[in-house]
Picture 1 (cartoon, helix red, strand yellow):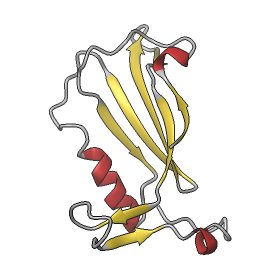
Picture 2 (cartoon, rainbow, N blue to C red):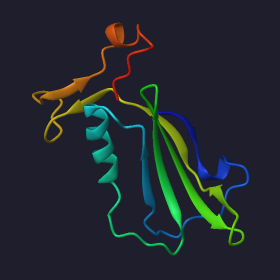
Picture 3 (tube, helix red, strand yellow):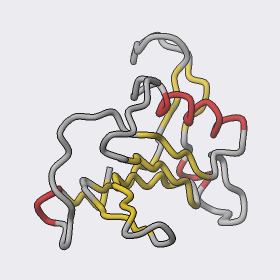
Length: 127
């Protein structure tokens, strides 16, 4: 986890969220591994949508880094709209994906980030 900015550190942020469940946007999770990771993020939030506060949680995959943002969309008029960042914001780099329940000693790994092999080529993306 890197580039962490808490809610109070973000300039021009909106009011604090009350606790409504946000909608989820999963962007650019196109590979087989990306689908698995996207499903894990989707299961973090229940699927009963509440459109009262219009909050959106965005997970964006770019160059094998996952960026998280929490926004609120606002309608200024019938034709114009905008978004406000609520915070927090952070970046995640996936190190491994384990099958089944977490067991660091005897668990089966579906995918492991190998630094010496995977960071050499910037053209091949895994997630």
